[in-house]
Image 1 (cartoon, one colour):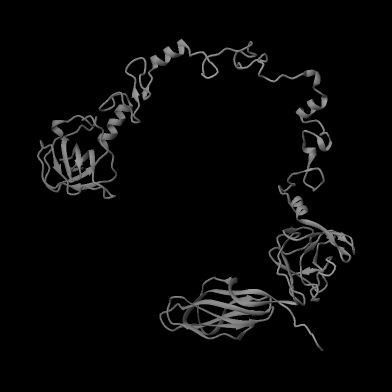
Image 2: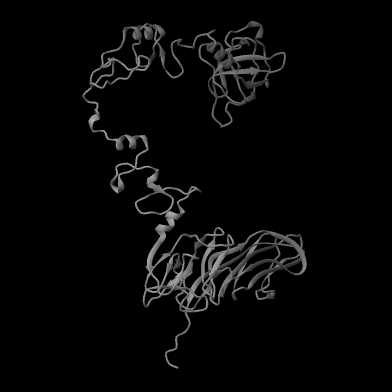
Length: 485
């Protein structure tokens, strides 16, 4: 059989009807593969595997019909029919697709024992082996003789449009590794050695000094990690451009008072009367509108550098991951002043990332909304006969917030019960869920700065809670203005 059998993975069925040892067709009970596609093409099978009636066959297959079978196929060459290998098989005999005929024939082809099937000159990609010395088709693969003859004869001479053989214009500097262009080719630039200067040679060697700000080349002497005029930025020892980036973020403005920002960055605001910059004060309603940090020294009416965004360096002893606020003494700290003015979050002991919630009046207030600000989402499962605290979140500012939580019972009886507390005092509506599926409850409550918002729960049989969350937005709240006293 000339055609190579097809390969299939793990197919097994049984005979629809019995066959004799001389039969050349058979019918399968099942004729589709694992994807539900009908079997098709030349396929190898093994019948009654592992029994005395075991037999390899190859046949043309269309779904359940197998015809033109080669019977008793040889186990050594996968092609020859062997009379003593042909067996009779009963109805219901085991039939499996086997890749044995394919694999043994591929091995013999690869080993040079057999030729390719059908057309010994055709390869799997459609290429043809040339049957004569000279290929006549683009699809043909040249044989050794043709390649040898071509190499000996040499190629065509090169022209301006044809690749080919050429010779060097002058003798090669190296016979082992010749180059294709000589210095007498008038299209190759030449160097007038009479005009080459020592500076040019030094520049090419990397040892020269740039010719001021108009130089045509640069060296590492032209670059620095410290912001400097007429220099090129390079990374510092930690591989960062922090100093250069900070210098871009800094703006030179006018101070309205003495500010020692070079010693320690100072939170500043802009006075809308004289447009000058002053230190923020956590206890002065006129000095709450934080704009940025003064990072250089400045005096009244003179320049001061102010950074409005980004990471501000120059601090000491900061606690990483903690928010910082303006204090009543104009410094910054982790506690709020009389009025809450957030200025940033520490990302290292010396660096603060600026965060702003500016004030247009004397105090910011919280208003309940659907904006998630914080959540204690861990699932807690317990059983308590009385109200027990299971979640707690500290609120920093004053106002109204929305509190939500998921509640369910975890046992076969009773109800999971939950209630919102503030500072240990019940303020919320008592909630209950008698199912084991979570139900979400929410309500709005009033809080003051530093309040502890808590979730208490109970059920002696068992309860579970999760997703204790705080939602709010920040509004700018201005104090009333006296028009007539």
